[in-house]
Image (cartoon, rainbow, N blue to C red; front, side):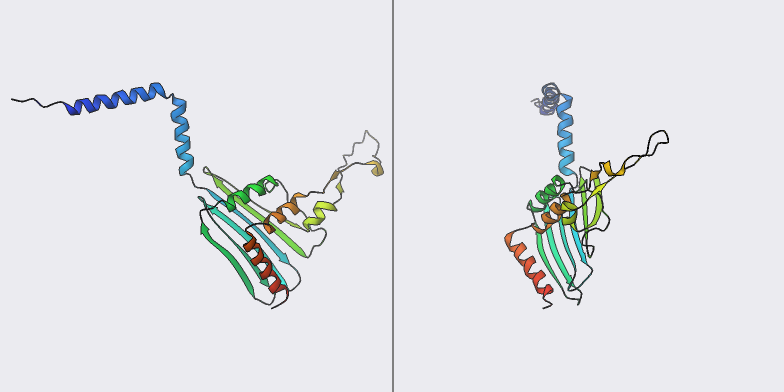
Length: 217
């Protein structure tokens, strides 16, 4: 009687040897790092940036830029709306490109997470609202900043002073106070980032749409 060769036992023994060798060759830290890589790769990624500009006076009522990148697929659009009711939208179809992710990185470098909302100053007939939202590695952040006249905040804004009164000290000389400057170029930089976004063709179409509604045609 012939005897069967114990292939099952051999396969089991080889599997045990591979597992033991892997533990010996790759310390627990390597397994942890590999697990983190898999987790990050499978985690949702969502980048969103929007700029809305509202005008108190005709002909243009509102402009808006909106950029979205979800799990590496980007799309963006521009909309301009006139007081007369006409509107034009320019939209880029979803595509696996890096345009929005690079743009979002530039916004971050220019301080979009750090600038505070500002009260109406300068030309107060035009209102700006910037919204950013980010979800990466299961962590989420979102904020909206409002302001007027980014050029004013970049070049003309004055100083703010803090006076702490103490009954044991003389009243400070207000003419000699040194305050903190409120000038901040980041507002103008961030608005400029939105205005400069996209290819030459996209920016050309944005300019044509804006010009068409500015003329009321």
